[in-house]
Image (cartoon, rainbow, N blue to C red; front, side, top):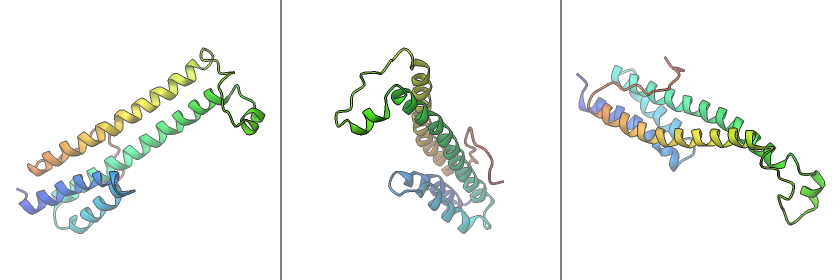
Length: 151
């Protein structure tokens, strides 16, 4: 049976990953600080700290992969029919040569990747809240779609 202090520390470890919305890299810094201070004292805190960090690292990997696909495909599909002189010398940017039908495949791939990225960020928020609730009840929570980087 976990003590109230252990449950609170584990819960705050999950919730600390929400600091990413206020502090850059807060979703890594604060969970690491909370986890590293109590990981040797409590197996419950150790488990939840690893889960938080593995989930955040997995989301980073998925996000980088999706954005690496989405950004180039969208840029290529938009700018492939434009000359470099038109881009450099023109102060009035226009899409006069854009062929939507020829770029439909690349645009679809880019839009699908951006949609999955957006859904992943929304799911992240709710999964963090759900994990914090489960942890505050004393349950060991394991995030879905997580790669175990830290064992």
